[in-house]
Image (cartoon, rainbow over all chains, first blue to last red; front, side):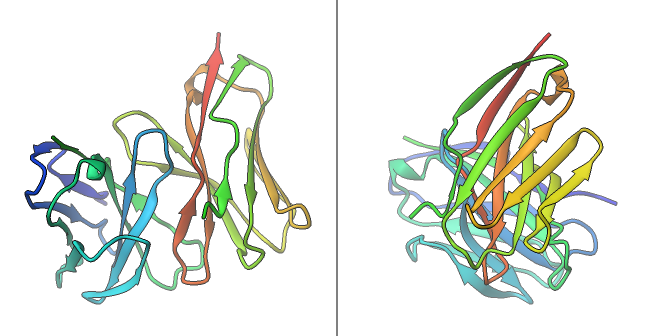
Length: 114
Length: 111
């Protein structure tokens, strides 16, 4: 079974620009969560998608938005990039309702905003 | 508001000895806890978990202890091996079913 894949692995953007990060969920998983991990910090929950709808959101402004597609893959969009958006962005897929909360993480996208 | 806290940013242990990583939480409604291990350039990988109805869960060299009254859990690795060197994250599942992570502890196991 394939795991979670994220693209791109690295990118550099200028402040004020927009960025789209992509995530393909693990086979059989129907839920995707996005996390931001700043340097020296733990991953912070951004939002989760299930059945193509947002299913919970962390303390992030509206310029962070997302999509989930019928094949359960997902995108994270960030508008009006700020320097503090520089971080590792992690995607995790899971099966909603599964008792053991089997989250599988991708390797992340390292975003640098200059 | 940091609901899951790992107060030790780093820990260094000799190979063969015990590694103890600690985690505290503030929300008494958390009822499921997990430990993840993360190597550089990789995503976190699941290590071990514990439900709040238990106070101990063991899997090979890894044991997690939960003290609900103190809102504290710990991960014990015995014996520690150089390959265990990584960042370890404690996480809790909140009422919405989302993972809430601590800041992480970087473990270094020296040969």
